[in-house]
Length: 266
Image 1 (cartoon, helix red, strand yellow):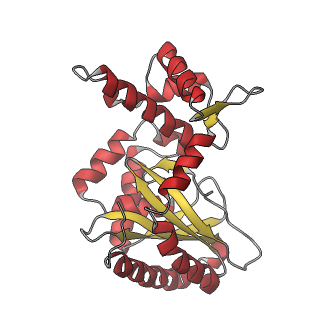
Image 2: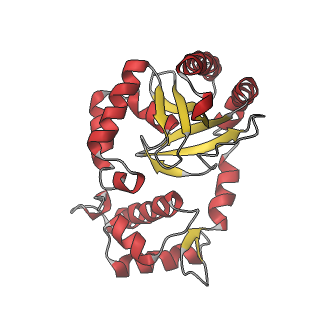
């Protein structure tokens, strides 16, 4: 189970409660499409069952989570959506990157994605569909997964310092098998991406799908987001991969230049 800092001795009870609540919300968000059972959350957070149950009741009372009456699974609540709408104008990365996503989708005919780092995770925050009739929706907007899972996410992880790569991969070690990965296999993908200068992956959960991703850096040079494109493998031969790598790199530079003019990317 993933270790959680809220369980460390010597912390104030108020701090523990906040950290545990946020841990629960992140885990629910990571599996929001299908929902999470109480047992799932206990297992994934390494918290005691009574603690998880008590905190879920509190979060539900505040509309931060909701429980489906039939399946008894937990999902994010309406208050999370409302808070996100309020925060959106300040964190306008999606708005800044939208023209680039549109150009990529129009130029390639395939689906383009924008992924942003969120601590040990990565979240898809936007996507644009191309005109090619066979779609590859490898990510849904709002989907949260461990950093390194998914091509854009892998591009971000691969651009970090060696120390942070190791820390992130080890911290997510117990979560990786759920996505068909191990620490060693993910590190192998990281090395390949570093050698290429971009992330390139066959999608293990979607046979016949290939994706390429390019990291975005802030003014301090830190990778915090990524652009990626997914397509059926027959449309992603080596020649086209090289062309897409150039396209993504050019669009990344345009975005980074715009961000450097004063946009808030934190």
